[in-house]
Image 1 (tube, helix red, strand yellow):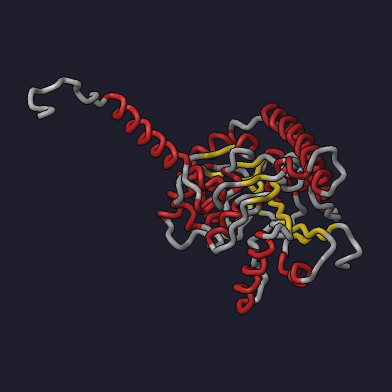
Image 2 (image 1 turned 180 degrees about the horizontal axis):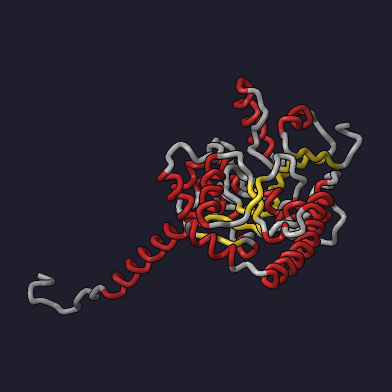
Length: 334
């Protein structure tokens, strides 16, 4: 296999690429980073695997593709600096799940578009259900195997309470007509503070203390690229108000906007993959992102602004300094 193909693409579980990275492979190896890089790596081999990737990156033996830069931040925190990569967003296509749930749903509940779909898996979702009961919002608790975006799009909306990075499912939902409501960073921090150690965040809650511009690297739902296609709420009452204001007309407008985004995203993803695999007209180097510093070592916007302001003050102060006097005193040359 190593010498029978031009490219070997490893997605999801990068550990499977280990023997091919070690071998003197003719094929170009592409690592599609869709989860933390060392997931499913045996504990006693994590250090060796990290060193192997570090060496492969330094010699450009592998090419990294990332849909979501939080994984770069996570890798950086654990000693793997990925500063050259191709940023290709998650696919807008939803999985083709064959089931009759959509038909049954449409036939049995014609008013689904007036109901909010919710899950009941984590503590924060129980808080959401309590809020809906308090304010009289119609909702339906979905089964774990609910059928994907095709089913969710039949409902008025869903409320996404982050519990783990999920860039693929978020992009699929946005591009397939699902109206998504997300808590603001501040409200999420408030919930964490109020219900300490109860909110499920799959160990990513430590990132809540990071400054705003760094948080967009961690939670895909706060990424400026995604932000225009979701609706944010600052508390439960604000959520209820926005859900009540989501009319059928407004919903159609938002769906049309998201569909246009979906078409654009498909074209952009196709362009990047074609270029990466040598089928495009552009030079492959044109699609690479090259960062001067690894993500976790970058300064925030606030820190960069402070440094610039400090430098400006130094320059202004230097210009205002009085020049040395040219006055000659009697004893100057004595």
